[in-house]
Image (cartoon, rainbow, N blue to C red; front, side):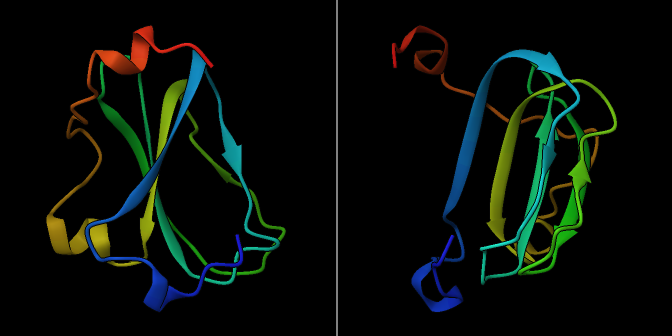
Length: 99
């Protein structure tokens, strides 16, 4: 949350993996770096891509059921051409790894 933009590589992100598909929501209260977020279904299909400004209580929702949320430095998805309808390739190990 308190990571500065210069500490995040342009090709680095954080993948959140949930145990089921449902409407997901994120906020940025203690996050000081603007981020992009992509919500994806179980099959990896991206259902929503949004830009999230830092330090806000605004909620950013998937609007559709999602199992994954991928956060990257803001502008990364546009630079990489990632948009709604694209697919995340999620390694099979994600589904078999225990907490």
